[in-house]
Image (cartoon, rainbow over all chains, first blue to last red; front, top):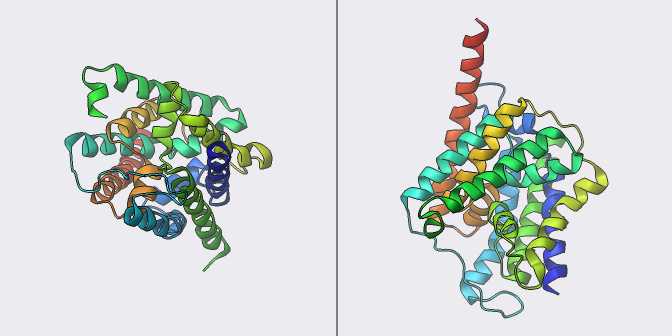
Length: 140
Length: 138
């Protein structure tokens, strides 16, 4: 059951990335380039995603459980830390360099391009670098 | 509103629906960098929900194709970018999906700060890259 619902959730999410064309790096860069020919389309994508997901989060926040009644703990919403800000800034540099974030990166792999393999390979290497750094695990 | 904006909105709603289903039926956050990191570590989750989610994620693209794609950058930039995305998303505990979609939908102050940070830095990076490229050419 958990397998099937997760598969279904993934299909919805992946279809959304495809329909909104989040997988085209040039298009994402056009959204990020506020000083050039700014393309606001991806702001609509984000707004649509947040609006649809928000009631689900409201339900779980209220009931401390998912729809099946299983206890569900949401991440802390208020704790601001150095790694949160520094990590997000590092991610921002990476995202701004290529226009690719993790989800679209995975979808790009289906095209079999060398570019997508290099990006995802380097991203996984980045996961590993952080894990084996002193204190890397504790920070997460 | 143009067809392009409607399509972007519809795509976003599908993304939100995926995040909602994973939360309501699996009790999990659809944060792709975290799910991928755990999967790479071999932590698939009870009944392999992480593998199932990732398989579902790439399935539509595998079936219908990616459409027109322009990588815009060369291999070496993509390698540096991927490394920074990997390090940054784990250090910051989330990416566009985990903080930008799920965190904001959860009205999280943490995720708002993370999202504003990576958006602003990404926008600044794009401008700096373009400035650098035009200086290089001149």
